[in-house]
Image 1 (cartoon, one colour):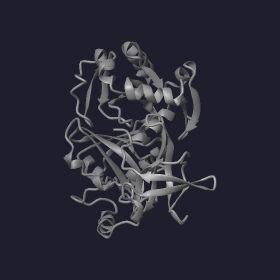
Image 2: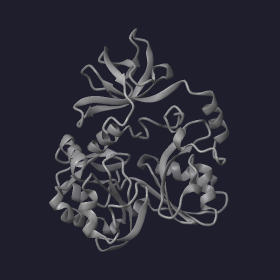
Image 3: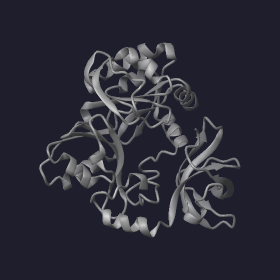
Image 4: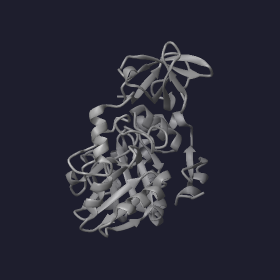
Length: 359
């Protein structure tokens, strides 16, 4: 089990620690509902240092990214972030990831913790032009400061003007007295905020400075439990649950980051799939009857025929009702369609609802 640079600090704060993607991670501190509410209304801090970071550098760095990414990284400019996925050769998804353009020949890729080795090997396989690749995952800490008060809570720590930063942009600068920190207007909660990339040796200093600066705003540490309920309220995919090696990106609703303006791995087959259509689609749904949908529960029609399966589900702290994501046959994918979730041998009624569940 790997630790982050802040594992001892989480333990000292009374966090409940759990294994996640090979890491010892805080799942909750004061409780998922309380932490969720903190992020939606004020500001909270996640340690997401388990995420993977690769630096790609050289004249051919962009060409390599274009080959392995579904999205068009040629559209990036210095300080811009892009979401995309890495397609495999069989119509599925290796991972979903972020690309940061640091300069014309230097890029930072941010990948999911459970896929660090797999992604590294996959990208390396296509690195035929000698792009300099560095895996800096084990040296890098990542803090996500999320919530509507994030820029107010952090502004005293940096000269970077935080409030006007556009979503999916970043700047490098001094933060909490540390040089060369990446401050990124990104996150996985839909509540606004920033993600801060620092070297492991500076992580505790930066964490402490953030909590000191944010004290007046009621800042709290937040665990992975609330991260999951927050992302689900927005309808954001979680790799391993909602998308995986066998998932069609078009079934998963990732057509918007599939750009056929260039050739990439499996692009010809994906283009044909887009033209032919898919048999199932990833949808959001809200429970009408009582019951919490869980990963892999069957989705059925009124007659009890299986029409799909749940990929993520929870009791939404904001809505006080159960919500979920799942794949259904396309004829059932229209908003407002009634479906049923098989929960303990009961058919429990739900309705298709387009995410985000919380506006």
